[in-house]
Length: 75
Ligand SMILES: [Zn+2]
Image (cartoon, rainbow, N blue to C red):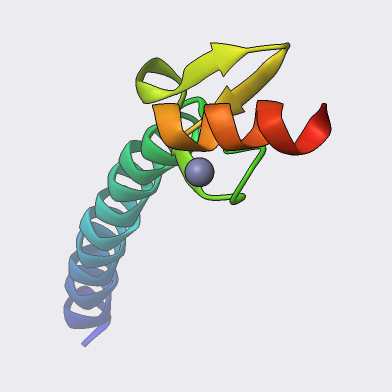
């Protein structure tokens, strides 16, 4: 009887170990996605990747039109 409980405990440990490892890997993957650099358009406030943004006047913009509109509205 004692041996059966021993084997059940080992099976539970293996089961717990496999389930514990998987979500940890997924979590670290999704964390790197969020860590990607994003900026906000100074004109409309939309979020976009830093590499796709247009930078001018120490500001970031989502498109040329918003950059021009921002310059026209501020001057
Ligand atoms: Zn914009």
